[in-house]
Length: 143
Length: 77
Image (tube, rainbow over the protein chains, first blue to last red):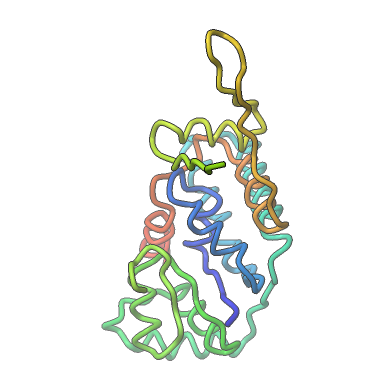
């Protein structure tokens, strides 16, 4: 089953100091993992927050964003479609799951394309499972 | 011939970081180089990950990327 990586796992590969090697091994195992521009955009947004906080200047931030493009170049790009938003909105009505719109969008895409959602976010992982969508959290034993 | 694996830990992480940056890491005895530690040959996805990480300054590296994304979502949406 192909996998669909959302931004917490993409950000872990690019930005995390420790523990990313485990995800690298997962990413390089066939089949080629999928991502969406939405996921890449969230990671760039996270880089932007750190630039605005003054951790690095804008030039270093742009280089990191370029690095994201390099990293995802051999991955399979999966566009979002209008129906994903409607499906995500339905998920959001399960208020107890604590989903935010980005959480729900990734779950909607994974369900539409029958992909396994790969997430490092426990809340999103639990919600996906509760909604009957295949999900894997590489940092949860047995997940 | 046996294979000896050295796991990455707090002590060896700096070596790994240096190798990812393209630096040379060598083991020396009495000032003489006795071994070289080089990056393994990887497929395109692994190579792209390593190349991408080399472009990210240390100041942008975080302890928990998932927590960063979670905080962003909870505050922004």
